[in-house]
Image (tube, rainbow, N blue to C red; front, side, top):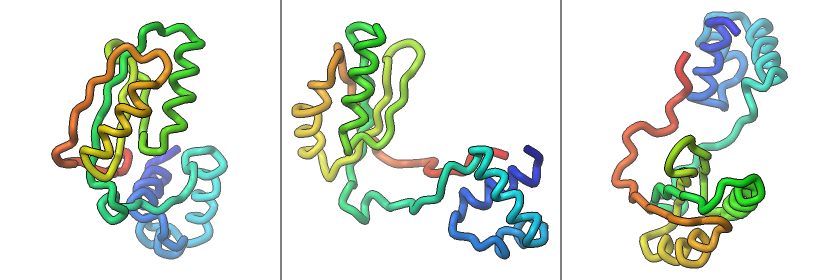
Length: 150
């Protein structure tokens, strides 16, 4: 991957709806080589897909919490059960396994605090293997949907 490929990736992260003609103009290529590079990036897995970025507020999901989960045990069965269960909770919009304490970071979106509390009590606290959950409420998003660095 060279600097031109990285520039193509940056432009597509900023606007995935660019036509190949627009993209080619932005990165300084003619259309055919640009199209070929995009296809190569798709085939190589650097571009995993294209999607719309939805404003959570526009769909009524104004409340966001970061939930730190610590498991009782970290044996393979517990980890698999936890990950399968957390993957099935639609309001968990991101989940990451961490080194050290805590074991997981979950990003959760709901309509409001009451909806979050209900989700916490009925689903999150009942996830298999959970020893402790700690929630932090998001006050403001400072860096949001930034493209990966070149």
